[in-house]
Amino acid sequence: MQQILEAILNDAPGDELAALPLPESYRAVVVRKDEQDMFEGMASTDKDPRQSLHVQEIALPELAPDEAVVAVMASSINFNTVWSSIFEPLSTFGFLTRLGRESYWGKRHDQDFHAVGSDASGVVLRVGSAVRRWKPGDKVVVHCNHVDDQDPSSHNDSMLGDNQRIWGFETNYGGLAELTIVKANQLMPKPAHLTWEESSVNALCNSTSYRMLVSPNAAPMTQGDAVLIWGATGGLGGYACQYVLNGGGTPVGVVSSPDKVDLLHDLGVEHVIDRREAGYRFWSDEHTQDESEWRRLGKDIRSMIGRDVDIVFEHPGRQTFGASVFVAARGGTIVTCAATSGFMIEFDNRHLWMKLKQIVSSHFANYAEAWAANQLICEGKVQPILSAVYPMEQTGEAAYQVHKNLHEGKIGVLCLAPSEGLGIEDPEFRAKVGEDRITLFRRHGA
Ligand code: NAP
Image (tube, rainbow, N blue to C red):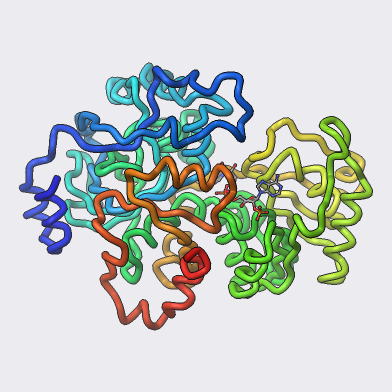
């Protein structure tokens, strides 16, 4: 592995990288099957990723013809790694077993470890015999949509594929590792002006927010739309704010601390609600929602922008969904991709149908959407929201920060990269985009 790393750091040409032997095993962040019941009976908030995420040596599997081996320089924490690490809502080993039943190549994934992680930046080391567009030496980022391209249902919008999966969550050999095995159709060019860690944090959350707010497949906003964004400095929200600003809309960001309010103002979001300071209690007890509190949120929004929001960017789920449906404008859209605080959702349907609102679901992004979202990063029109960086050995701590909502934006993880700041190939373009804009979240996180 050292030889591979040195070659990458010396910018060795692709044929030189291709000639280096691949190791038989590599270090990866895993959860273990024999520990999947370790938190049984505990409250979610008490389940600790630092106990369940381990760095261990795993065997490099055989490469399928449509795959690539990528040397991972950096990766990131996504909330799905938190879910894997607390074995909620399900242990991910069930996903691997099902994938294992599908084919000879699927069987490789069904192991007693699950190498997790759904983001990566790095360098292609090998490609399978059917790969045409990528070669050893290519600097890449990886998106997490794992699709079976021989399945007809994948060919309109691949997110509709019957066996669409999220790499590193519903498949093994994910990105929090020294190496990863990915399908060639998960590869995208690395933004030349960004470091490895800045490049590694975008694909999953940026593509998801792109589909939710830009693609016609979800709730494409248009100039002048007002958009309420929950968790506006979080992984999804930090990109969502940029899309609304870029698209000529008015974001209303919801966050939970004065620091995060400042960060949003620096990002250019004028209208921000500190939900902790406001003290909304949408649920008066575990079973009862309080409409007067939804109304209070609606009034707060109107007092800032003078009207209701056209779109609500939803992901907290049970805690906020009733309020989200209520505050959307007549004819407005609630676009949802998650349910962090609980997936059994309740809302007052009268507010939905009488005011002709709609709920639109969204999940990650197809290759075209992920590519378009990555292109915006490459062109400096959307900035990475990296706020902190951890070494791979401390992935458990990094996931803990996200689980406990102690972070802002995205947390990067150095895998093979020996330090921060490496991997910039186009410093002139970086200067043109502006160091301040690129590192805004990092400076706040410092
Ligand atoms: P994140 O970085 O943790 O950000 C989420 C933010 O939501 C938090 O920072 C928090 O912000 C806010 N929040 C959390 N609980 C809340 C509550 N009860 N009420 C109001 N706000 C709350 O996570 P993320 O990466 O943005 O992901 C968010 C969710 O989306 C996760 O469940 C994740 O699994 C899911 N997700 C789904 C997809 C998909 O493709 N379907 C893709 C990415 C993520 P404040 O405390 O500042 O308000």
